[in-house]
Image (cartoon, rainbow, N blue to C red; front, side):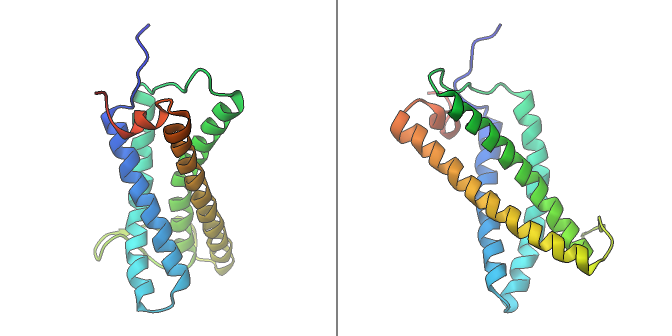
Length: 179
């Protein structure tokens, strides 16, 4: 049996922080698109689509890294309800980072629009064009984005709780390596 680790692997930390920036950017871009009907909306949409697909691909890589590297354990004195909350919130974060881009892709497909990642790279549609399906997926995408926003806020609050109140090493395990 090997000794427990106290920090996440460097690649896991890199992916965590890269995706944190990307997800927060996506939430702000999405809010900007929802609040705008100007020409800026198209520019934001053209940024939103490839960033969403990048998050989808990176979450798959991140899951591979998570299951192929050793993770530090939670503090032994952490109450069971907090351990459960940590595990469930991580499952929810991974699920949302995976589902939101797929729902967005399906929504654009249902609108009958091409999913353009660049001027020359187009993804295939994943659902047939349908106004009813588009309306449903648009609402689902919005609600899932709100859920992601609130889950990210809770994740941040928990990280700060561990770093500033408990001072138990949980935050430091993702912030920096050994030393």
